[in-house]
Amino acid sequence: MSKTAIANIGENDFDDWRQMFVYFAILHDVSPTPEGVARTWGWLCDPTHPETGLIVRVRDDVVGFVHYRLQPSALRGTQILYLDDLFIAEAHCGSGVADDMMDRLREIAQTHGCSAIRLDTHATNERARRFYERHAKNTNWITYEMTVNSM
Image 1 (cartoon, rainbow, N blue to C red):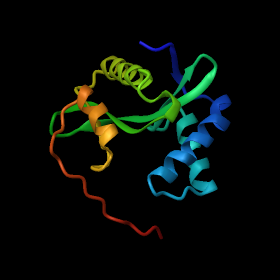
Image 2 (image 1 turned 180 degrees about the horizontal axis):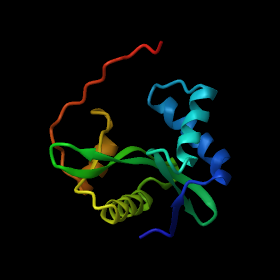
Image 3 (image 1 turned 60 degrees about the vertical axis):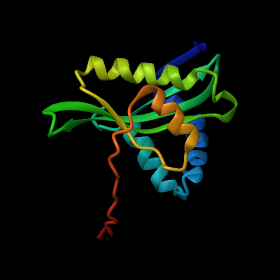
Image 4 (image 1 turned 90 degrees about the horizontal axis):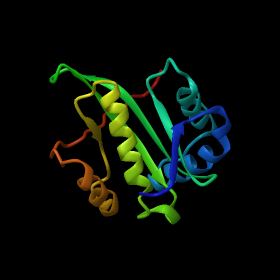
């Protein structure tokens, strides 16, 4: 197990988080706007908002983050934890940091009485798929997204 410190994201983490978040967005072909970054940060720091996050440090260096939310699963009649984003700095990939993050998410899910952790990853992201398949099963569900134009 790596020597990681995993904690809730806090106001003092903004600069490190923003740098990684913008890089993460660009990797996923999303052009982050300053307004979108600020809105996401606001959600993460608002204890009343469902989206929350963890920041991960090795020694004193921030090396990753997780965004997640608790949500109901109507078919199960239970709550689940939905993992929105997981990012690890390239230098720490394969070091066990991501495994530590998944272990922490499992603890959070258990604490909240969740029946499952659900996540998506891109079909072509072989590295992530191999990682997630060590922790979860592929359900073979296909995700669709409908664009909504805001008024």
